[in-house]
Amino acid sequence: MAPIDQLLTALRFYASAGHLATVADFSGMDISTASRIIAKVTLAIARLYPQFVKMPPQDNLVKSQSDFYHIASFPRVIGCVDGTHIKIQSPGKYI
Image 1 (cartoon, one colour):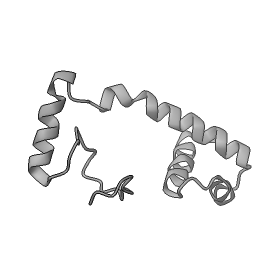
Image 2 (cartoon, rainbow, N blue to C red; image 1 turned 180 degrees about the vertical axis):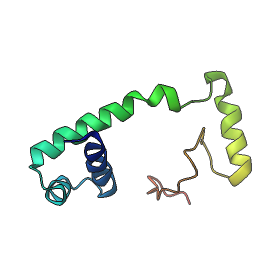
Image 3 (cartoon, rainbow, N blue to C red; image 1 turned 90 degrees about the vertical axis):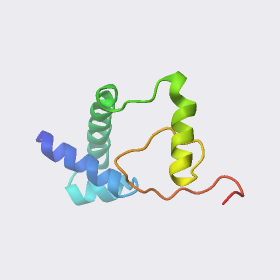
Image 4 (cartoon, one colour; image 1 turned 120 degrees about the vertical axis):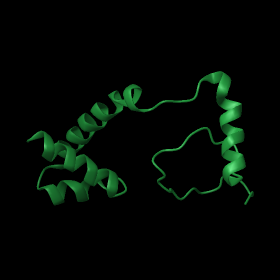
């Protein structure tokens, strides 16, 4: 399978909330094949982490948290990814 098709299979999996059978069926492949492809692509993307994800230095974490809190009253945030909004289920009773 061409690399672009492997990437598209993995992206479809990520977008489908992890329904492997649906992705395999959509792509016309066996579930085990889809699983291997998704694992391979995911690992390749994860290897790029050090090149593209920059965490604040340990001695700057408190300042980063304070800066985010002053912007939006959002506690304990140390960074964000491209402005994407993700629904978060609160683990506690805080609003």
